[in-house]
Amino acid sequence: MLKGRKVLVTGAAGFIGSNLVDKFLAQDNEVICLDNFSTGKRENIQAFLEHPKCTFIEGDIRNIEDCQKAVEGVEIVFHQAALGSVPRSINDPITTNAVNISGFLNMLTASKDANVKRFIYAASSSTYGDHPGLPKEEDKIGKPLSPYAVTKYVNELYADVFHKTYGIDTIGLRYFNVFGRRQDPHGAYAAVIPKFVIAMLNGESPTINGEGDNSRDFTYIENVLHANEQAAITDNENALNEVYNVAFGERTDLKELYYLIQEYLSEFDPKVKEIDPIFGPPRQGDVKHSLASIEKGKTLMGYQPKYNIKEGLKEATIWYYNYLK
Image 1: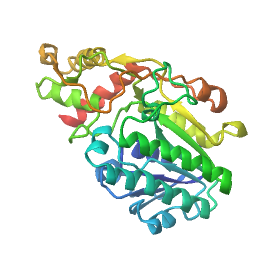
Image 2: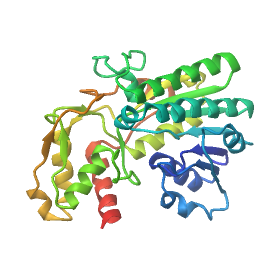
Image 3: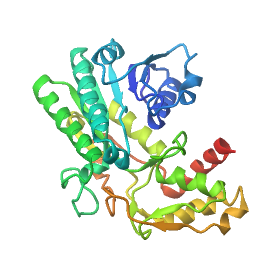
Image 4: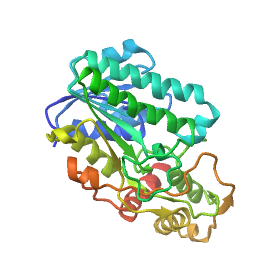
């Protein structure tokens, strides 16, 4: 357990960031939160702002002074701030680059200058690009398929160079399709699970991109929190300055995902059972199949995910139903 440390969470008002803040405050850490609310929501961190060990800084990682202020006295950085979404990056590659590469470099530089002990950052399964192999193994990647994927791969390259050049210890966590509480169901770039949920609860037919046979290694938020904590507390020197897949190690296609969500939501609203999906064109920049090997994380840093897709979806649909009603 991570306890009694001073940590920084960037993107603290976002989906994953706010869950990390929640977890680490509950474990008696001092938590500095940085966010500019470009995609994060104030409601995600409102409950933490009165906590005596929580400090919130409204700032932008594209501003080096904000980064320097945030890392003062910090031992461990959990860098979650980024502009996610493949479609967003295709529509606006310049802003995606500015946040995900320039902002990342600012945070890494500020952390190095402040003698941060460990820099843990959100990497992405999009880095595997067009590599056809399954399951995805950390040392076998292809060419990126979107501007977003380029930015996340550059993060890994910068982290490696900063360790070799300046000695700062880093760990990259390649997230695979994370879902769960506080994931925004609204907006043009909402992820597939909350989009399906909100459509069904509104009595509408969700759109499945392609024929529904695309598959993903959907990863419940609790597995992601566990991976971040393991990255922070591991004392295995061989675990440092590496990247790891963060997933469960099973894949689910979009049609199967649809019917699982339908099954769980119908417990709250039986009419959901009558809704059929709509099939639309494939989405540009999408990888066809994604499945992670998680052996490296298990072996080197003790990553042991507990929630499979069904267990995670049961909890997530309860949260969404209560949030949306």
